[in-house]
Image (spheres, rainbow, N blue to C red):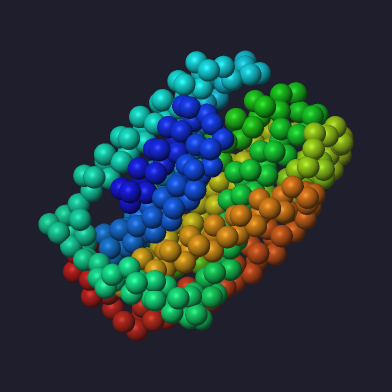
Length: 356
């Protein structure tokens, strides 16, 4: 995790000296670092949790993670306010602050207790990197992991949609009074939705775990379906592709900023529903193979995110929404299948973990 965190700091610091070669090199570096930090984080979360605390810890982690989206957007929103062109001073201030925050984050990771030490948790024993790689390939061929991969895939395209496509749609909808301002506010509302979802499932994790993870996934599914319908009604069909003054599908033909920001919140909240429960089920079902399990999760998620960015430049809005609806439906049902199987197995085998 520490090595992965360092690559993030290097990537951010690279914008202090903007150059094409530096951008390409640091982009490759952060890709490697992302694989390290997210796989390590999922593994660490699992090792420091039990069957009873994994849902709570996943929710708390997700809420803490998404505060960056809220505070980061607020910071950049005010730094860029009223500026059509970002001058050098503003750029330096933004990226120096972000670099310092990144360095502090890496420093905090250095202070985390080691699993299996006096800090608590279980020791991890994967038998070396090659053995871990073999376990990952073997795990990817199992029925449960194949089923979960559909849910992983959906989170990837949903991530690309709300982090890239949706903001592009808002900025391209020229009937909005101030599309650029709306994009900044949208990022904040997505962050608030993510934080609220993670916080609720973290605080009430000990209670929700009694009912299983499937009701929360169902909640996320319903929230996203409502959100996709509102997006379809509110934004022009061509908005992912170009600036447009086309009317929306609302009765008066004018897009609503309130609906746009509501959809931002719903996108974030629904995403929190899916991701917190995926973290929870991986930490529960694969507690002895959490490293390979989280590696596969991030692999499939990153693959689908890349696919979404690839087709986003040619697909109109309704195609994006159709793809999201199809994979949300399939991913939700396949997640339920694994969850119900895990619930039956858990009832038959009581938790033997001593630490809490």
